[in-house]
Image (cartoon, rainbow, N blue to C red; front, side, top):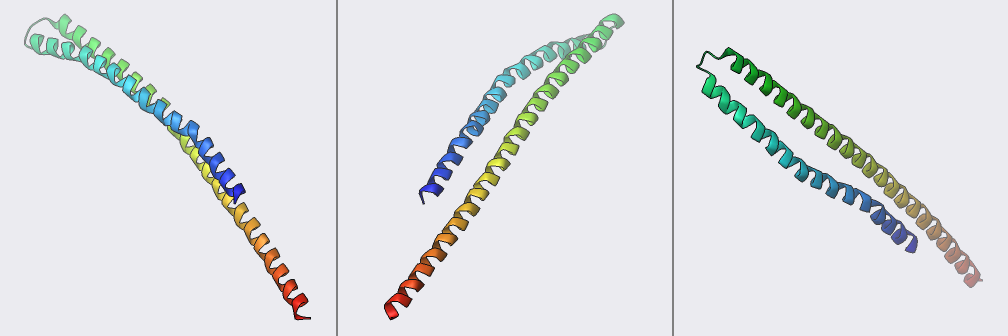
Length: 136
């Protein structure tokens, strides 16, 4: 039974990095949120300027506004994609590690069952031998 408890404790210790990585991902999400707000703050003045000059004849200003909005959208999309890619990679790594731990746990359970069954058979054989000895 100590072997199984040792394996369970080892699995628990092995899962610590997963928990830490999960907390780190949560922290990164919280850190990204202000960046998104900053991008939104950059976008809002541009949108307001567009509304102000929409009905004017200042074509250059309209062109500048469109170019700037595209630039901000590109920056935002690039940042979003980068963050999503990083989070997806970390999630995939955590998922793979989780599957590996699950396989290790399953193997530990199988090993335990094999040892348990072997010991049970040995015990049954000893009981049978004792019965034969005591029957004489």
